[in-house]
Amino acid sequence: MSALNPYRPGLFVSLEGIDGAGKSTQLQAVVDVLRAAGRQVVLTREPGGTEIGEKIRELLLHQSMHPATEALLMFAARQEHVLRVIEPSLLGGADVVCDRFTAATLAYQGGGKGVPAERLEALARWVHPGLLPDVIVLIDVPPEVAAQRLAQTRQRDRFEQESVDFFARVRANYLQQAAASPDRWLVVDGTQSPEAVQGIITQHLKKALQLFESK
Ligand SMILES: Nc1ncnc2c1ncn2[C@@H]1O[C@H](COP(=O)(O)OP(=O)(O)OP(=O)(O)O)[C@@H](O)[C@H]1O
Ligand SMILES: Cc1cn([C@H]2C[C@H](O)[C@@H](COP(=O)(O)O)O2)c(=O)[nH]c1=O
Image (cartoon, rainbow, N blue to C red; front, side, top):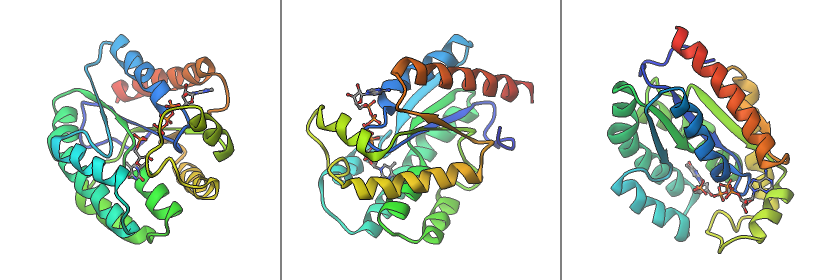
């Protein structure tokens, strides 16, 4: 469990993974665990989560641009999201479950596209000083597995059309981040059945919540 977040009393949880890892499949279960424990929960996503953020999301997902522009737009959307949704929710006592946060920018724009980590970290310090998710769930799958899953689904956006090599770099960056902060991250093997993945996440969240409430 992380050091005390300055935005208590709400718990901040984010879900991460390469496209097709199974995040969307697990999101509602995460919300349900927290609600079953009597907590108020705000479910949101990045890029997005605000009116401006959703407009930026449309650009990001469908318009070709330089990786640095991409990173800056991710943080522009995040600034609105933090100020208008995440901080007020946490300070008001609600838990926030966010489909991706800054770890995604480090992994995709940093690991995947080569934007220097120091620049991304500087933006993170500017946009959300002192704020990090208490729990980051990484659903980890090899890029080949994710590609197979995505091939069987809907039309793919700009990111979902990236190569297996790209997603291998993104995955490696996620795993490095997780290894550097094992108390904050839960890495789940996403090649298991959806039910098995859900069971592991549920157990971890129950424990994390107990610890959080006891502090
Ligand atoms: N554990 C699993 N085993 C097999 N298939 C799965 C599993 N989890 C999800 N899937 C399937 O894989 C596909 C992608 O899942 P999902 O939409 O949850 O991924 P995602 O990580 O949210 O992707 P994206 O980030 O691109 O939105 C869906 O068809 C889903 O049913
Ligand atoms: C927050 C964030 C997201 N992305 C990418 C990752 C996904 O391909 C898309 C949209 O996310 P979704 O989970 O599929 O809804 O955006 C990114 O590259 N950098 C980020 O910071």
